[in-house]
Image (tube, rainbow, N blue to C red; front, side):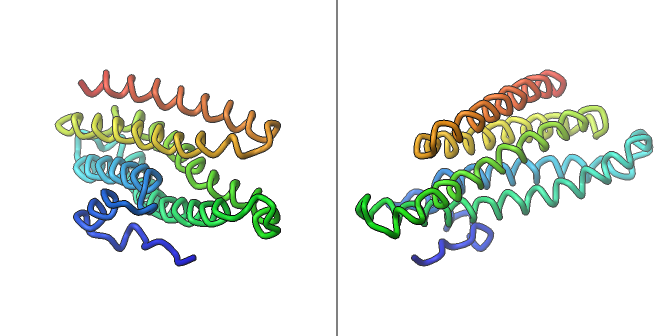
Length: 204
């Protein structure tokens, strides 16, 4: 099994061409990752235009911390997108084996968990990012409110997209293991949706 090409090594055109092709990767996980990273980058632009402003001097520390978080978030999304592709590739390889194959039996549970972990982490990151975006509504340059609203919408889309990749693999887990994950996911999505609506209203 060859490792999928890292997302960060792709140009926009090459990524879209690969995504549009009949190939297993990049797929939905990469789309969620790119969307989340774009949300973080958009928010970073808003923060950069807010740092050093006299009228926002009381928010300087908030914005400085936000800049650091957003840089990490952007890198984390891309790394998780790569992990998602690796997890999918491993599970897909086992899926093609006979159900009684000893390799499939031995590695299956770990492979399912490996396919679910990256998108779960993206959802959790989306919650943290959306919380930050909410605080930035009062701390950043009002001339860039539309960009902050766009970052929120993209964060919501990235989080919901990652959730699809969690849910599609949950049925392959034992019921007692998947129930708490599903409940956690529902709560996270509700929180992100609520914050996104609030941010959109504040930025409109």
